[in-house]
Length: 496
Length: 99
Image 1: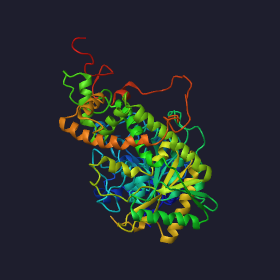
Image 2: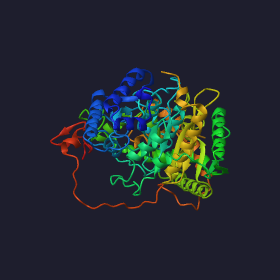
Image 3: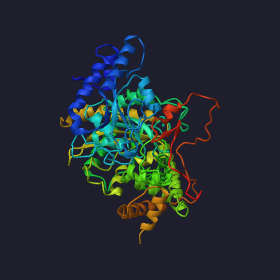
Image 4: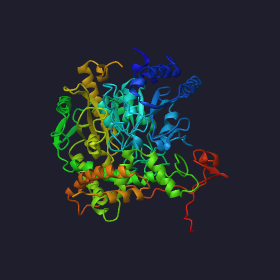
């Protein structure tokens, strides 16, 4: 089997055993990128020489007898919202085009320490605001299953790169579903760790109380290995949790749900969901029951309002966070002709440098935080956030994990929702509650929808710092379904 | 009745330091109106006696020792600046003519 079809765990073992070099593995993936990137367009920045130099350095360290962990020498695609000293970092925005950050994000630093080889920076919706990559200032990424469909978003470059075998692993960030939704619509695994479980230092901020870095992979075990590699306390992030990383790798190897209590969230499903999504989801629930789990229905009535609370809280935080793009210290500056004031230059720069969705959210957040509207919008949304957290807590008194479809529909067509922001926002309906409560949640493939042949994801939600439960249930579903399908779901994807 | 008027959007754009065109104001007024109408549904959750959450974790006041540590050099800090003069960020005037 060719190197690009192997899992990250397999590649790591082969490299450690000296069966293949990191340079050879990197070259195989770079060749694949040359072949399929014109169609998929997952990356914003690729630099063959920098990649090969990183791989060569890892090979040298391994030959010198250094012990580097299970992913040493394995290539990874890195979302272009994490700062990287040796590659541009743009957040897919014109306002940061060509920017070279003066420091590495903690996640970047830990990838390097673990010996992972960064293949390039992946496309996203501008500042991670969107569900399709159509809000990228540079280009739209295509879904490898059907190039006329979106790869999800905001981390759509990362999901497409892994689904197209351009990389065995990639990083993402999940603020309202930006890892789980793209994983779901491209047929791969995507995990949002517990908020605070992975560092935000050097992650360009969108909504600071929600932003969470997490892994993409083609297998549950690979996702766990990557999460373990970059997670853990970071003194540079004051909201980082000072507690041991949950034993996610062990859980991914313990694919057993016998005796586990699984709650089906009543409010996430039914009307408005695509029939093929519900069919695959219901089968997955039955599968869990047949594997020995105790399945019960759980009601979380305020989850249906979570979407609205989120679209007040996230834009409010965004309007404040994006104030830093002021044309003074870094990034774009427009209209500085010696006569205009700083304020005028700022307004011209921001108008030229931000795309439509970013402008919409900045203004929406500014509105929600305005005196006179604050109590009715931002204040009320914060209270709804408390109610949702309480509903999760009550549910976890009865069950170990909750399940739902990851997203109400399969991948939609490029262009279909671009002029209708509310329709675009609905892609996050099922994923948002876990962001508001800070819970862990994963999406694993659970089949193809009958009507369009596109992937469907099962979402598994677990309490704060119980990330291991997501992996344990995810691994059990993966194992049972792959034995039914005779291999991974991605083997059904058309060759590019 | 619309939730937000074009004049209000123009005010928000000014507060947000976004120099928008007239066409953009029309466009955003329509879209923001639809979004605000939707998000207003947060009012449907009875939450008068519920405390607000700004955050998912019960973390407050994380401190570190007040020690001098290595930080960015002036060269690195200025490396991405749109304009530099004498090792400083050069910016447009910030005060009006009368000042």
